[in-house]
Image 1 (tube, rainbow, N blue to C red):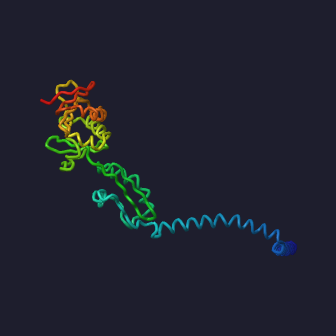
Image 2: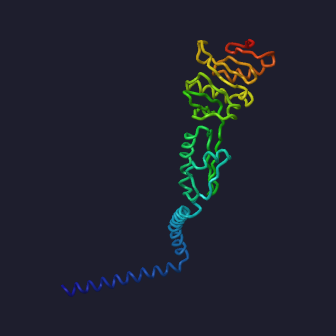
Image 3: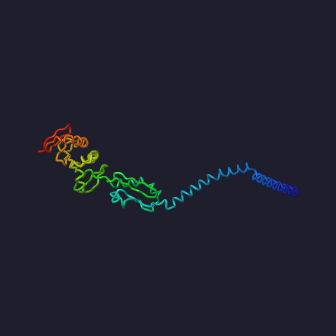
Length: 266
């Protein structure tokens, strides 16, 4: 039984050796056959090329992330007025990670516009590894005093505690007797619809007391005339006033609430 088993083991080894030699012979034959070699090459290429592309892409991506090209080289702020305002407030510095900075653009824009009401619009762009911040700085359209504190109104409707300068007083108007935020926002919207010359002609806007309507206001113009109208009609009535102005022979009050007629100022 042991001898038979031993013979069987020998036969199995011989058979395995024969099979191994036969497979090796087939491989050798395959190397000499062009069609077989081409098919093997195609299979290798189909497997290797995607792997090489993925590997190369990963190397390029992580190499770029770690390279100096992915660092902010310079930060530029325009115009000069914005440079003075945002010079130390822009949370971007040379050497910051460019990818993270570009991803954070929307948050930075929103944060700075909320912090500074005079910024009408802020745009952050990246050219190569240089960051450019362009801010549209708006000038106040009106100013007023409340409880001994000075405030200014910007075109976006926001109010900032600020004492108006002499230049600001000459180019914008003073609001008197109006404190409701909705009315103030309506007034600044109307002023933004005026041309520059018409807006600068308005010296004061005063709520007309005893008129029965909180929206009725009196506009004191720098050309010595006055206009009576409503807050939501300031832009329209100022345009109409330009046509009536030439008919006024002396400083007058032009009532434009429900039509138009003028009375000399006593």
